[in-house]
Image 1 (cartoon, chains in turn brown, red):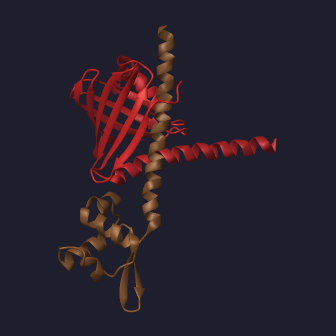
Image 2 (tube, helix red, strand yellow; image 1 turned 90 degrees about the vertical axis):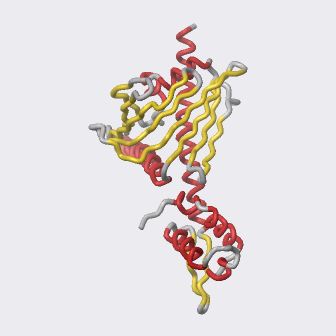
Image 3 (cartoon, chains in turn green, blue; image 1 turned 90 degrees about the horizontal axis):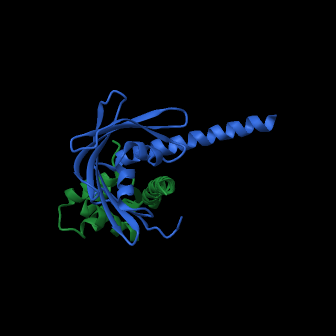
Length: 106
Length: 165
């Protein structure tokens, strides 16, 4: 299922999970120890984050570790930057329209 | 044109809202017109090489503007705006949704809130755009970047043809 990145980061627990594993890869149990919610609830958050490809699983021996997909996080910034550029272009165009009208009025 | 005009762009992912602030070197009533009169909006709203075309506009509460963004190849992307609140030269709000050419809306859309203020000879516009989903905003962006890429590849083809001569 294609998930929305907003959905991934809209939830405070999921943002806290991202902050936690940004520092180091962690097992689901170690992650859950940081929250006063059920392990099941933590698993659900981890599943959503995985589906959004913001985190990925890595096996070390028998243990699963979750780690942050830095590139995916960068993608969000890149996306925002592109959107910002569109508005910059628009407003530069508007500056020209405004100055043309002002000249016509004089 | 001065380069000191304020431009601020932030995305609040939690509130699913984009905040844009921009100053303009023009008086309030002119900037208001540029944001609310279709014949002026069409002149700047589409980032080049895209163009904008308004089919009809009725600027009043409950009124609509039906318009298209057109790629250099002539591909039209239609959208409908419905004005939900208007306080002349101060604020207007609208609901924006993609549509097909027959005005069938693709919901959900986004909620736009514009605030206008004047001071020291410049006019400041604050825009807040609330989106149900980032995915939808990604689609907007895709449309624009595709349009730009297409025109760039056109240019490449043109240059290739010219250099053969």
